[in-house]
Image (cartoon, rainbow over all chains, first blue to last red; front, side, top):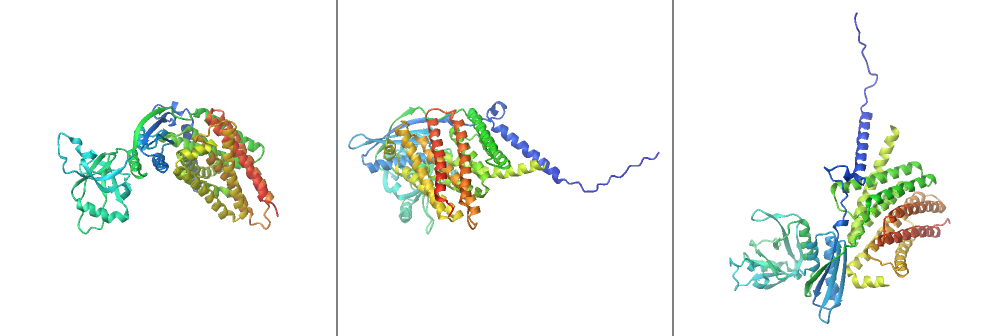
Length: 419
Length: 172
């Protein structure tokens, strides 16, 4: 018996596009589910290999009161000292600073600085209590700097003569973010002292007079020595002083930069005492708060649906977009272990929920709302106090994410309907 | 009044100036954005009145809380004006698009704008009441006082805005 096989001919060519689309859709859904699981509270209990804990700042807060002696009772001088210390601490990111001045007698005052922060205590102490008044000094001729039995001779200010150059003559002390290689092969941060343009010529002349000499920068009685480099004849390059900085980390370098550049305390300024205080923290059980917020969000949407304040379509899209925004943000925070204030985070999420509803309901206002809100929060993050800055930065990230989430939600829901 | 004395005596000039500049810049940006979209003097006057009233209402709330209820206005209350400002911006922004879409009509219907504003005011109020309430349950002490005060100011401001719309936007 002859067996014949019938030839199967496809009328149409096989279309891979829908198959690929379904695969993409499945992948995207899997990613959303994964992110949701990561974002959920108590995920950290699931795996021991990877930590999914939300890194809260609550336990990292500490508080101290620093008392410093100020050798003046002049209100303007005292105000200036307050400004400088506030600027240093604010720009360093200290969350809460309170500064009080008290006059002791006719000649001196006390300044009390209370900080409440998660920043490095040593660096904060330095910023709050150092005068950091610097000047250029030259070596005294009657001092033997090569003494082997006294290695500290180079650091004491009493072994140097003052020059006419001090903090008034330099417009900035620039510390680059990256370390540079030293002559002995190590990497180190350097500070570049840049004089005012009208003093540049005079400064170059001063450096030429002391070419190849060892000089120093005296900061609060201690000297950091440096060697003046040879200046080639006829050079037009701006001459500066480059000094090695005693900083290992970027944060330490930032603190030193702030000490140099936040202004100069003219009056006598000495650290007297410091006292530990109970940190003023608003901590909350974020698991319970998460559950509470989810329940109220769902209730709000059900209310809007039942009383027909909006269409089912619009509510579904904005609900999905809200969930996606919060899930992505939380997952990002958990995976990167960025420390957060749980109280601020909860308020940010509440505002985000209202924002997403607003832009989903009023598509005509979407661009206006997103652009204007980001600009407004940008201004708050630049000019506000530390707490406002932290709040605004988080909100900017969330608002940018809402736009992406809304676009994605529209695409996702449309594709689900087609399946 | 102790609150204002504390600010004058203990805040640095940099802090006070930076915050004042911040608020003026924010108001300027919002007015420029509203003018760019609506080209309506009425809308500019409405927006300016709304934001100035929100500042006044916030300060009044602080004074009432401090004097009548002996609440210490601490550092956390610096967030209240930012939250009130953000929600106020969202509220006004929601109507800007609607106004823009309908302004080219021969006789723009202000009744429709007021209806839209009422709808938006209701939605915002519902969200604030439910979300803030769910958060308040888990707080105590100064955190709960802060949230309660902020929530009340925000809701009152939402309905003040609705009142301003009824005042400024009428059919000719």
